[in-house]
Image (cartoon, rainbow, N blue to C red; front, side, top):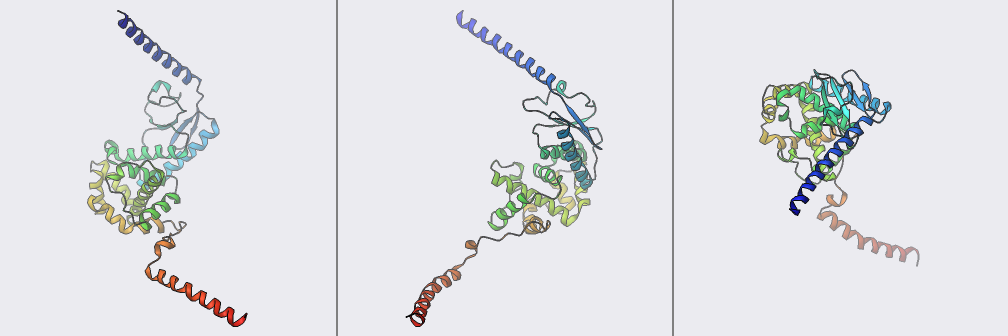
Length: 297
């Protein structure tokens, strides 16, 4: 009977621990003081004061203005952005701040970062454009538009992608590889740079109207890469190859403030350079001693 008693005691202890944790979580949520900031198209809730809430709401509204114009869509339901403090449970509606409308499109942000707020707004607009088929939009396109929501795509990612993929002569990620964001920062930079370059290519060569048409096609039930072939005339199997042909222009010339990069000098050396340098060294030494003998001795 002793093992059974220990087992029962362990079960009771686990139940009590779960109950205590639940009570502590609700107690913590009761102590949260939410600040809200309303803008034209969204309301944002935050727990670090009104100034921070206003700042992030401005970023969110800026993202809304840029992306909604780009793909010609608006979120029909009230858009609510909740920036959660660390350790909170966004899945529990009872913990939502007071004032969130029942029919609102609620987007949860678990990091206190403007980029995460912009991405949440961008995803809400993408979902509004594609409706029931929102899952068709791949991660790389969502990531690229998240960066676009801040204005011109960040030069760091574009420069890194350009140096890695153009001047180091590495291949770009395939369509399948674009389904997963790499874990290391070097390859993340290449990933986001390629994603941004592909979006820039679409906008630069076909215009934003065609991009909006792409999202409308996906919303009508056309698979994403089939929609690209339908709108841009590029089959999925040729997408990366066609982008590669236009990558340098898309990555480096679309934003003039990004300085074009060159291969390092040692990579541009060839055998003729090496021979010329090797031959010049003894000639320079010989001339030095001849000159010394003529003018100083």
